[in-house]
Length: 329
Image (cartoon, rainbow, N blue to C red; front, side):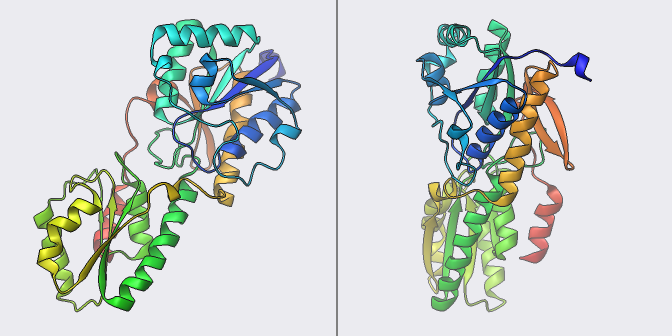
């Protein structure tokens, strides 16, 4: 209702932590939604580092034009050890007051939200988080901004690797991002038809991997492809290759680490739409008087989750997908 609208004159927006495709679409949506309600927007460069070191710039319609299709973040991102301290957060709060910023939209993952939550509690800053991380590990939203793009980037690479693996009858161990979570490894494993997907959430010892691969060889497969999350307890693809190559001498065991290629590139349509919805929603919930919350999409409906809940634990993998991967391999 109109009577419930909180008067906000200026919103600050920043991106923090690891970059993910779609962050620019979220920045654009925050700005455009704010302009629609006659609210000023100030962009903060280099995340919390820039918040402390006064890297502020006023955004306008031109500032956010022609960025929705771009990967990375036009506001840049950086880590800030100083922001982890009370003194650092006090400097940040003073800068927000200096620029008469009424509320802050933070685009990032759990580290970003942890900082935003502390800033709000210590200095009364109104904050809303927008989940953007390729790991897809934030609870309170079905998908995070950047996940779909990273997934498709990894899958495209794995499909190409499968072609050369089959041509030369090789065994490829492909390492994807996911230090603490296996969302990318699990879904690319299923989508690529990989023989195995090794996940941080699933305890898989090297001997068990060897046994499963030997069972597959009995089916006279000409090539083999294993997707390994970088945080899997086998030690990643390089260490796993060292541990199994002597047992599979009939194969030319190769390793491919996809690395940061998964962070780059133009966001998919799905990520652009998700980022646009969440960026605009962040402005709306601030105008409704909410703070210390994250906006997400669950079952295609917008949802608000307290930041303290969003950072309390990692989102769990869908165990029906884990079971499916076992059936299909």
